[in-house]
Length: 289
Image (cartoon, rainbow, N blue to C red; front, side):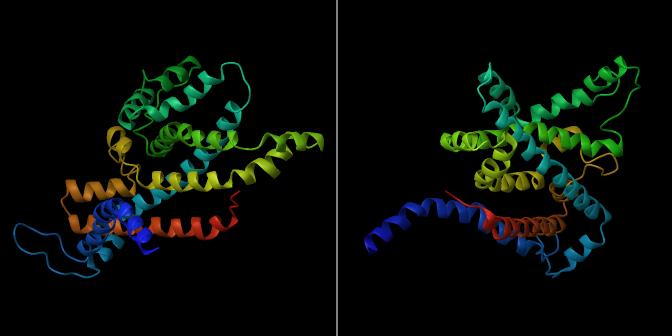
């Protein structure tokens, strides 16, 4: 038994080393850096305790980034999950051209986010972009979708949903295809409607997949930065500044690494609380077959 345990730990050792080197140690180092001032030159950084966190509290841009990220998450997470489920239910049926429809749904996932951002930048371009061209056909005027603070963040939400829904659809489709067919047959014999079967049988059996998709959707909502940089760079007037973009700007543009480390710790704390809720509360309601 001891030999098997040693062999198991030896097999796990490479993964544990990588996990500690690229996840646990950077997290601990960021927490330590957040307690020191930004280092200038060769002089050692002085210990400042919680002063960096107090600076965050007094920073209105940080609070706006936090609010933007919360609204971004509220908009993208349920929309992506519901849309992914609807697409999976649609392509799970025996439809003509089902393979092409699956490929069309999954195609945005295969594109790099930078390419997606450039495509949608053209869609949002005033006057000759796709959206303004369609609106012009109906007599509408031009609109600066990315330059207007009221529409910039919703525009980012649409891009994210378009990119992520197809990825989540694959997991729902795989789960639907593993469901026993005799359940549907038994429900049909009992006279159950398709809506009742979906609500009483399909959705409960999809809960493990939904929890997995939800965890990934939350992570994606708080680690987004690439299409923000390409399309708006946080503007206009910080309307699309999210937490990770705030960390990037603070650390690499203004070279305030201490404040960036503090904001990163806040972001990690939010993710930890969210994960605890997902697995501690929602995970208890998930039944695995």
